[in-house]
Image 1 (cartoon, rainbow, N blue to C red):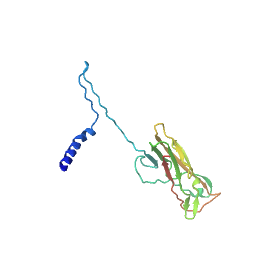
Image 2 (cartoon, rainbow, N blue to C red):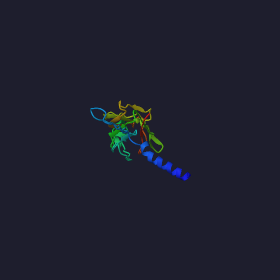
Image 3 (tube, rainbow, N blue to C red):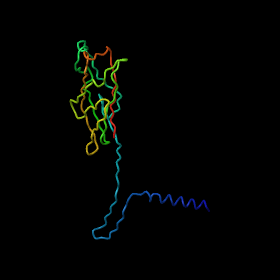
Image 4 (cartoon, rainbow, N blue to C red):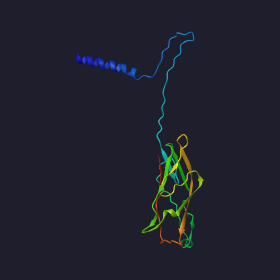
Amino acid sequence: MKNSLFVKTAVALALAAPLLASAESQLVTDTATAGPGAQARLNFRIEIPAFIALKVGTGDILSNDNTVNEVAFVLTDPQASVDGTINPSTGSPVQVALLSNAGSVEFGSTGANLSNGPNSIPLSQIAVTTPTGNLAHPAFNATAITVPATSAGIVNRSGTWAFSYNHQGATAPVGAGTYTTQVTYTAVAP
C-alpha cells in the first residue's frame, strides 16, 4: 500500500514538473469585436567577464605571447668615456597597448637597477618618451598611474615608447661589461 502511494506521488510530481518550468504563455478567447490577441514575454541575459589586456613589445594585444622584447644600448668606443644621451641600437621604439572593460586601471612598472656582477647602473638613467599614441609610460618603481576609463568603463590606449640612456662615462664611469635588468609592467583594476 505504501509502495503504491509512493509511485502515485512520483508520477504526479513528474507530470507537474513541466508546468513548474514552463515559459510564459497566454490564451485569449474571442470576446471582443476586434478579435483575440495574445502576448508572451521572453527575457535575455548576456554576461561579460571583466578583462585587462596589456601588450609591451611585439605581438597581438589579445593573445598570450611569452616573447619578452629587449631594448639594447651598445655604446661605441668614443661614447664610453663621455657623458651623453645614448639612443638604443635595437628594440626602440616599443609598441604598447592597454585594453580593458573593467573600468579605470592602475598602471605601473617595477624593475631593479641594471647589473653586471657587483656593478650596477641605476634604472633611473633610462628615460622614456611617448612619441605616438595616448598610453604614457609609468615611472619606474613609482606609484602606479591611473588610466581612466570612458563612461562605458572601457580603457583602450596604445602608442609607442622611445627609450634613451643617460650615460655618465666621464662623471660616473662604470666597469666594462653587459648590464641587464627586466622591467615588469602591471595593469590592475583598483
